[in-house]
Image (cartoon, rainbow, N blue to C red; front, top):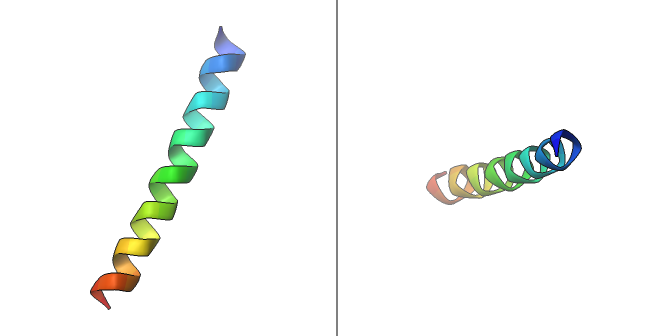
Length: 28
């Protein structure tokens, strides 16, 4: 369960950063 949670957290963090960078580019 811990390994699955770590994998999910990594995926969520990656997607979150991807979306954040895209929003910053749009604002600029």
